[in-house]
Image (tube, rainbow, N blue to C red; front, top):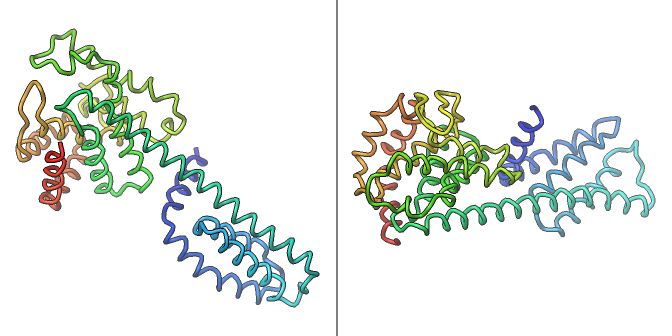
Length: 316
């Protein structure tokens, strides 16, 4: 249980390159000074500095320069460790360089994989939205609103990212629902609605083979975004805090965008009416804490959000 938490914190930290670079600049003179006045050599100081270099700098020449300077400092700062022969010095230089270069390469692969996954997610979401002109950009809107709520709740940057991805994919299971049902202009029969209600499980089964989605909350969003706070939702009937927070967030974003977007079976509602509906259903359909955060967003940034929504509609 502890390792996933540490991993999550570390991955969240490496996205803050500016902070890490600042930490390196501050720690460099401190560690060199401590090593200078310490009788025993502190090799771990140099390893930590090379790891920081690998995390914060992506230019190989900088790695060569820093590793050479630190290898030189290691032998020259303390009289207890005399300067060695050049072959030993070069070996130490290469060792430090390989530490930073390996860290940099691993992080580049991680970031490339993250970009690829986000691009693939966007393509999947767009392919779903393109099936119905009335729900075009629905997934993107839900992802955007969910991200706003997550930031308002002061969740970590990594969780915010995962919620955005989950918002893009929340309705992916509708790919398995007949198009005639999605575009039906009239009221659905009970049997037809039961088929629609299968889309969270369909989406979950589609995405559960993706390793990255197993632990980051995306599967929770896809499976539970139609659960209700009072336990009357679907597909499992979970209630209250039994529903993962990421799904409680997406549920509000999904409902708000559905209400303010024109559908084949009804006209769109104005923003004030939709916000009032969210407020009325606080504590029954929706988590009151998440509702409060969502309403607070509109109090602070209403004009900006409305303008952005209008721009999207104009593009359509």
